[in-house]
Image 1: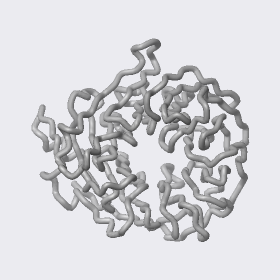
Image 2: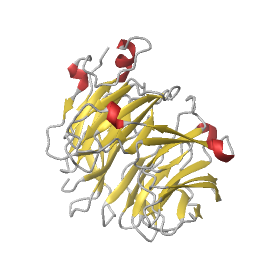
Image 3: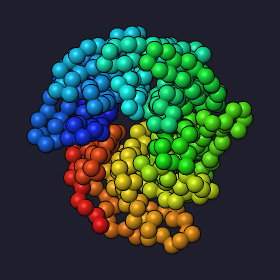
Image 4: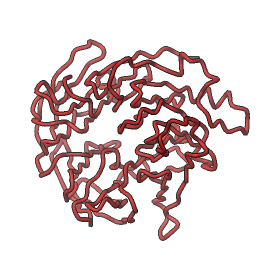
Length: 384
């Protein structure tokens, strides 16, 4: 592509499941494009003049947010429909509603955040009570079907401290209803599936060895609990150069029973949300001392977890088989050494760190993007 990949996603709806969209850092060649995997036809998404930070494919449109301060809304045929131009700084974070044509967006060190219906172009804004707030990519999400009118917002202020906020939204208004201060910037916020035991909670982290669970049904001090992760006890590699499992990303499995946390140590820790006392698995990439950490995504059946990291590999972890193989009551705190190595690792064979990846909704393809500017699509076999 000529520039490092910033984001890559498969479509998640039956009419977009064959499409891959990706964004690129600033290059004279392109800033984003969409690839149809059924025909291998690529269409450039024309219009941005700077790096595209985040991309989304919805059932209705393609949406891209750029450092040129604009959000572009394209048709599924890659034609530019219109531009959202309310932001004055570069776009860093976006979230799309689980069922409505509604997105939320945030820009670098600026108020307000915006919400927009990208079909009828209705818009509203909400201000964060911080000086020059920045919402990191991955720290903005709507709730699941049971509380879809709630927007969770993780923030960094200009003094490198943070805040977590809850906003009640609809298509005509947005109201910040709760905030809590954090000692460090919020790096990621995870939305649980509706069938999860934590279905009314958001999980977030502040680049610490700790997860925060925010319960939307509680009021007062009980609404937030924490889960500590001691990397000294979990990580077997000695070559971590003192870097711990400072979490920069987390996500629920689609069945809602598992939660993965990605750390700066190039390690993925898998938790059972019904019992956080010990992790189920610790999945390790080679530590290369880079700044990108790990990118992760679950398969739709919650069996596989795919991860990519600074070691230039994409690894496919058979979590379902690991759970079935582990002795009842045991905790497996090591890599999947007992699982077929063909399932364990896919070599990416390129020089750049893996910084973005996505699984198709049928879990038959993995797409990975790297800092070297390459997009690689892997086909997945059936592992029964």
